[in-house]
Image (cartoon, rainbow, N blue to C red):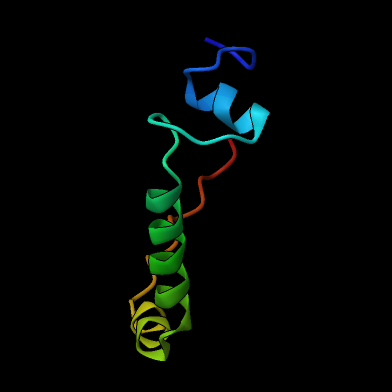
Length: 62
C-alpha cells in the first residue's frame, strides 16, 4: 500500500486524483471549516484567555 497503489489514499495523493479513499467534497468541506475557525476573532480571544501551566520546579544538580 504505497505510492503506486491506485486504491489507497497515499496513491491518490501521489497521482493527484480523487476517489473513494480521497473524496474531493469532504476535503473541501474540511478546509472551509478550518478556514472559518481561524477567521473568527472570538476563537482567538478564547485561546488567549486560557491560563498557562505553571513551570515545573528545577531539579538540583547533585
